[in-house]
Amino acid sequence: MTSIIVPAREGRAVALAKGRTIRITTPKGAQAADFFAYNANSREEWLSPSHTWVTTFCVRPREGDVFLSRFRRPIARFAKDAAGGIHDYLIAACDQFRYEFFGHQGAHASCAENLILAMRRLGHEIPVVPQPINFFTNSRVESDGRLTSPPNTVPPGAYVEVEALMDLICVVSSCPFDLPREGWAINAPGGPTELVVEVS
Ligand SMILES: [Zn+2]
Image (cartoon, rainbow, N blue to C red; front, side):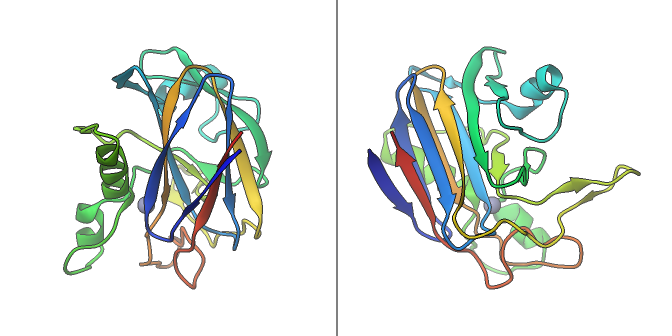
């Protein structure tokens, strides 16, 4: 088994062969983990939540779901949810523009940048940032359609496991979001924390 610490606010890429499983843990709890997966043989093909929704009929990932690529091929399976179903795949990866939109001045770490840097370390340039699965993210679609992100209740030690259905390159980002406001918390109040990634 390979174990990697993803430091707070950073991202890491790992190879995940078909049939292998990646476990992502939030040791301190309430830390959003942006998850991306690419076909290892073609970075043109990536996991796509919006293509998956129309087969699972749910805008929240649930244990047992088969995630599809943007070419509608099975790419990964949500093998184990030990985080109580508190996950999102509606919210785009945070990026520099988003932090500026929220009033931040100067450079800010982001999941988009973490993805680009993690893939670049493997020699891959990523021109488009796909929609991630945001594990451990407490978004809600209210009955009137409003999207909210109340305080994150994912407990310390919660984890998820995803099984590769083709050879993959996976990227996990410890979401650097630290500008909470009423109805939009994302991470723990104390700020971003590390994640643990294990491949078995
Ligand atoms: Zn983020």
